[in-house]
Length: 361
Image (cartoon, rainbow, N blue to C red; front, side):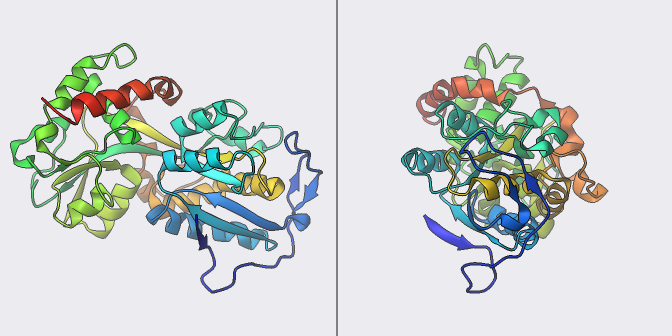
């Protein structure tokens, strides 16, 4: 893994004084009560790279380090959620990561495989402040961000903004479309949206949606946009691509004449990233303190303002401007979608993508 230091200089460590937070006795790992003055060492955080890393470091990591001068947060990136899960599996016998942020369906797998530790409200009271939708599995890592699937498009190709997923089948998009297929969870969200548009109950069958998406295959330039769909649209390589709202809004704000963001009238799916304590984490006390801070109203507000992820803590008082760009202002347009249930059918849906949708018909 590559080490990404959070400091802006060459220092690899920061030395500390203390704080005031009291940590309860942990049932996991058997650590004794600790005062913030006693928190020290390194917390290894594994999370997403690129823009997420940059913004999360500024909005959450550095303020946490300032509040706890004896703790250094080491930010590791290993790619997407599936790759992060692979890292945890490889390290199961000797964990090197303390905290991991990845999508909800992956965290459920991690819980099931015993890779992630419990986070009861009794030991992490801030979890009790979170919205109901933030509790993915009671007693385990909760949501840390809310997002939703959108479609980014070239304003040159679409001078009139598209409003429906029907735009994906526009003939002018032939060879100019980017779709992130499963196992990327964008593929699962798209499958659910198309199923809903066809009047299909995705919890019972997605056969109609699979057949419909298979007809899209000839127009798709790539089912794995690299480095991502936003960049490819901005560079003129694609005219439309699937994406996540937070990143899409950020890029659209920076490039208002080039990039548009469509939330289709058919609705969207809420995407959830969770924050988790790794079972057997090398620095459990400081890791739990970091999780508490990341879920606090202060940290939630800061990251929402920086990158338009909707906060999971209702006490976070975000600006109206930021709120209008997040999933928080569009919850009535989110389809009911159970990521815990999706985890049970992800294997089958992935095969449908690989065997039927990507090859087309």
